[in-house]
Image 1 (tube, helix red, strand yellow):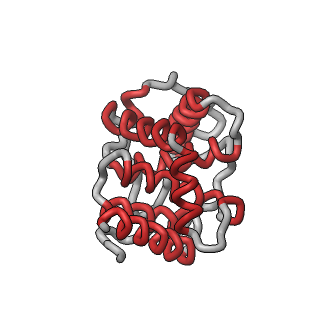
Image 2: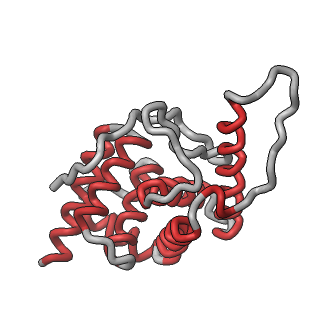
Length: 196
């Protein structure tokens, strides 16, 4: 079961844990403040990956660090073309409302906090649906994306077709086509079980 509503962008370079950047595409420039939920889900995925790779770091610290990194990246992007050679770049303090709308930031943080708070129950459901695959065998992107999608589908109340479509697109963007197919299969099975 696959739902397409937008063209999938080309995958970016693999982001490092400490410097996860805003999804940047030449044909779809980012505007600030960000207003769409797709960007919020991409940000939430990046934060959940950070939490997965740094299990002993407090979620509040991950959120804070992530938003600061996003603002720094936005500043660099804004000044990249306007910079005069030899002139130092002025970095503005982080104003939350200029990076994302309050509603989008709240949506993103709710997804992250909710996913991490229910990780044990979500992981049990994922393992049950992934025949012969332990969580450790899954890539960090696929594992984190499935956690996010299960949370959004089961506890957040987003309709399954929307969750599946968004998750598949994010898997293709941050991983590859095969990851998109894998995520689609697991989420489709989960959605069918929920309907039954």
